[in-house]
Amino acid sequence: MSRITQELLRKRAEHNEMMLTNLEEISIHQEEIVKIENLDVYCRHLKILLLQNNIIEKMENLHKLRELEYLNLALNNIKLIEGIENCESLMKLDLTVNFVDLQNLEKSVQCLQKCRLKELYLTGNPCTDWQGCRDYVIGQVDSLHSLDGKEITHTERIKAKQILPQLQKELVYAIEEEKIKEEQRIHEEKIRKEMNPNSEDKVAYTPETRKEMYLRQAKEKEDKERQRNPEKFVVKQETPLYMNDGRIRQCDEGGYKPIVNNWEDPENVTFKMNIPKYLDTSLIQVNVNPTYVSVRVKGKLTQIRLDEEVFAEKSKIQRSEITGELVITMPKVNPNELLKQIAERKKKEEHQKQQEQMKQQEMKQKQEKQNLDLLIQKAQAKLTQQIDDDIPDLE
Image 1 (cartoon, rainbow, N blue to C red):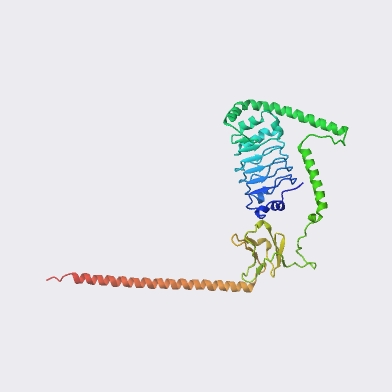
Image 2: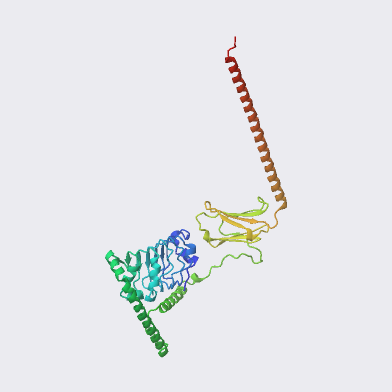
């Protein structure tokens, strides 16, 4: 059995330069996948998701894929349509050859009613053995335009809605018949195993038998691959953090030339590392320790010992969206007192300088105001003199 891991997703995202954050389409078929997982964590912008020919038993962890338009789960072990109510962009759902039966048909339809689905494929599911299945789905799900590749006409929809009450009654009886047949099948299977436990007779096609068949095929496939390419299964060893004598290893496998600055800031140690801006952040693993910093980029280790002890838990990790530069700011456990005094004195000098500039500005403004007042007084005096000269003397 396989799982949907970050490594598998990157492998299947080669067409997108192994980047997951902006991935829109991915195909993970014939991988013996048993569970839908991690897609909502790494690939939230998926539009097309192809998971056919696996052994997935439940539709789960899909609710955050709001941009998903096409979901293919054909040839899996799905028994109930669920978990897609929040997939507001979903238009096409393929569940060909799964195990949606009559007992789960009503709940499945209730889920579909909350979607805006246009195309649905149910061919090969036990529920389609019921003659009224197509009309029942059409009568309940108004958004559908086609079912099992056949267009739904206006006349067909009207007819389905007219006979829907009768179909709901027939479904109850059909479910009871299905339960009786299933109990009978289980009983016959039990007797057959008791009579001949080593028999290889053909058994009923069920989720359990299909899962068993896939796992057996996967095991055979892996054994052949191990014989053909044994080096493929050798686990690659990562560069160890420590040397043989127990000291922290210093290295720069990726050639990123990191810079550590202890002196510029008296209270913090700054670690800077230029990483290509197009590189997905999920490929970067950062580990801050009191005495060293480790950064793995695509598995390659960059590790630097620190001259001063830092508070690892208080460290701040940032990455520039424009340049891709990684910056780690780490508070010092014992800040350098001399540097701190220099920084404080520098801060005090800057404050005094600002105060002097403000005083000079105030004096300048005061002088300008005085000059303006003087000009106004002169203008007023001149105007008064002109008025006096214009008044004739009385005889």
